[in-house]
Image (cartoon, rainbow, N blue to C red; front, side, top):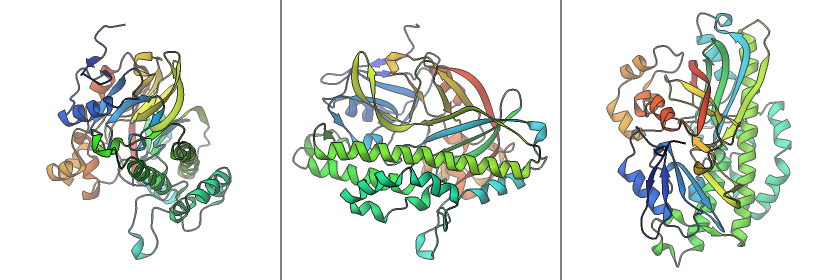
Length: 408
């Protein structure tokens, strides 16, 4: 074990912070935000910080927050269960058509993506009539959702069933990639959509209301928490677990629809290898670490237990990695969830042009317009530096480069 695999930050009246950020930039605001979280009295052992760390809302993206006896809803955030799924196919690059625009259109038709203001009628990012596949997956979620909405009826008026199997906006994407042996993979990134956002927002508000008397003493009002044993704690744990399951089903539906679209364009029959990885990177679950059962919140981090497969995507135009966890206990068996932004979406839109976007994604069949400039590769950290900083957390199994990218 290298003694310098992480940098240690300590402060008075605060849990230690272990940062796997050697050779990657960390903005001062993100450090300050980490220090605020580390001051919470129920942090277990230490915070673990991944190399893609950057400022988030409430808690820092790229952080692993172990707690005992309490949970911070804003640390989990509003894109509950956001994560990745990847499948390797038996196809090779030579099986793909020379012009990939037909494949991109087929995928765009198979999966609702993006969003239109609902005032103008239908939202293009939701189903008008969900297909049978969505119904099959919804039946596995419906009973628990009813229990949730019986307690919190305001969650009924959300995009739930109509969003199952849809991509969303922002950094959510569907990609066709090639690995180091030119084999074709399909990979996608999405979460719990409208309903997950509504659940997150509702419970963040409830936590702040419950702590009304004490909120002034918190380093940041977004660190409002529920204590174990309280009604809202139990309700939140149940709601968050449901939203995480919704996110997993959401990715499964989309994957099966994308593979079907691929088989319509590529006439050669193909199989998919079950190296399929379906992993969250914004979530909370009970785990055992250092001999104790604790709640681990991973906000922009992936579980990397020994031998566990995971996905670390780069940005549009950069490579992505399929990794195997090394089970590093110091990081609570975690790794980064991507490259991590170096600038905000607004800053990226000010700084770069459509021409920059076209140049940066020259090798990828994707949208190249002003609406996706905030996702330009230059707005992200260097993925190679990020991977080098976490060499003690994961090993790289496959390196993927995208040839088709569909953005919401």
